[in-house]
Length: 362
Ligand SMILES: *Cc1c(COP(=O)(O)O)cnc(C)c1O
Image (cartoon, rainbow, N blue to C red; front, side, top):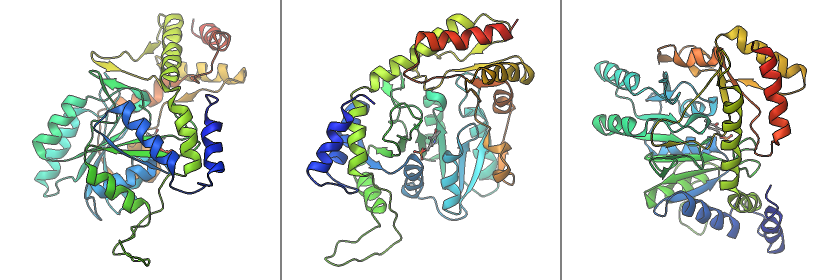
């Protein structure tokens, strides 16, 4: 926490705005809008997952539709597809950013169209804060008229050719879950250029109440609005977002400086024009065996590290889903490791981790 969160939370108590609406919600949306892009429209919601769910609805996804989704991601990117009775089709990654492969994406679109099933949406993810290939994905989206739902849950503060992530989708989302670069303990946001889409998102997020003095509903709604108390935390967090990004980027540079030349160890570089918030610093090893040496050596010293996300096409829950794969994400899952990456790590903390890894990699 920055320290200022409690002031905003106190304001919520003092003014008795303990509700899923209120001045903090509006101010937090304004702070986000000013940070990301002045002409964006932002709805603060109860989670990133809820934002993805509403995003799919806004893009017209319905029962039995097909949605193309980056396979290398956290399950929350894909789960909302199934909430709607739609079907995910998983697309593997390219090596440069670890995100959705434009080649495989286009191949999947062509094949599905040939089968008479044109996909309804594309979910692309800026994994670990690294921007996906925005230009290439947008070109495919325009060529085939399939909208993009941009999962920017891990990429608040990242940018692509100077433009902030969270502004590249037909609909985009953020997460403020406890593990993200800034947090409201739990929370999310939906971001769009279309004012009416924001209105529609808030309508759906507040139980889809029609305009009437009584409670009237013409369709099914959801309870996805952000609490005014939690939005107070978000306002305090926005004040330190850029500090957090700098701290995370410094973690990355420090690890890379001290570990980058070890045999078999690699770090993901920023392609030209990409600026990553480096939410988590990840390294790759030569083999699964080498990865496990590192992980277990850290665990022995009570330092937690974790394998990279297990791709969705390898998850038991999605075993019947179609996928277009090239081995990239499966390889990263086998050989990759997320290092301790908190914004509050000291040099001493980092050095401890580095020394243990150096001892194992000889
Ligand atoms: C955290 C995360 C989400 C979900 O956000 P919640 O706020 O936890 O619901 C979605 N996608 C990705 C890639 C995430 O990391």
